Image (tube, rainbow, N blue to C red):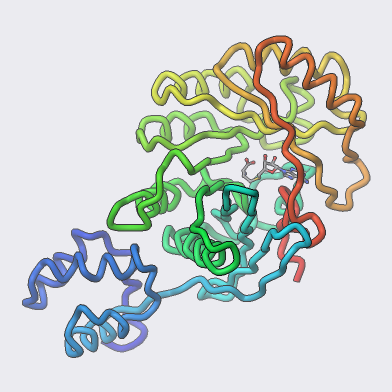
Length: 347
Ligand code: SAH
């Protein structure tokens, strides 16, 4: 085979690899070995797969290629956060962030190049959606941040959030496949409980994800529990009513027994009134949930300004009074535009 007909080996399942080895007269267990190099060791080179004979490696190199996602540029924040511009084989770039806290290292990974949704307050939304990432490109981001955590913090990666560029539920098959590879013992062997999928809210896909029984956590970017306001700041959401979203979240809870986290930014003059707080409290009472109040990260659009501490305290008090767990999530990596909603390939 010449270069043009080489197959991307990371698109093959274990069974397909087994079929390949059988077809060239080799034993099946070779597939497992290769699979381990690819998904456990995150190898980017067929020639380094030394548990295979030299001849067999040469044969693999004739038939296959690996299309790695690699660090293009790395920026370090004063708070220890690292933002990676990750270059894909076709020249597209996505961003992945390593977020250290005292005990944990979290990887914030992208699922798409750009985003097809249109949240007014998000920098990624200003980019056109170019394409979905492959599961291998998602796993590469995770493996990269794991190695950075080992190098700079002397501990492995502990958590993963799908809160980078893109809408993970609109790249469903790669999302599921990447989670399987991240959690499988033959892959990176991480616990699914430490993975959070964040969605802008696509009810059908939330139900589908619930049916997969993956044991991951779910976060929903709510930002307003008042329909017309949410539709204004997240225009795509006119297609999905808050009621419909709620039904899908209750379905999620029924299936997984895992509480939903609502992500919520409070903006001056947009969702800072008593009516907004009451609507959120009512919404939270309809499904087992907790709230993360996220600090707004400026993207240079004067419509959106973080609400005052006073308003945030009102939110916290009223949520807590109603028995709803609420956390304030401070921003990380803001000085390098690595914070939520700031990923936009500025370079
Ligand atoms: N599409 C997915 C995941 C990417 S966004 C989703 O919407 O959940 C990750 C989180 O950052 C979301 O909660 C999103 O609403 C939030 N976000 C977007 N822009 C932001 C900004 N400028 N400041 C703070 N949070 C922002």
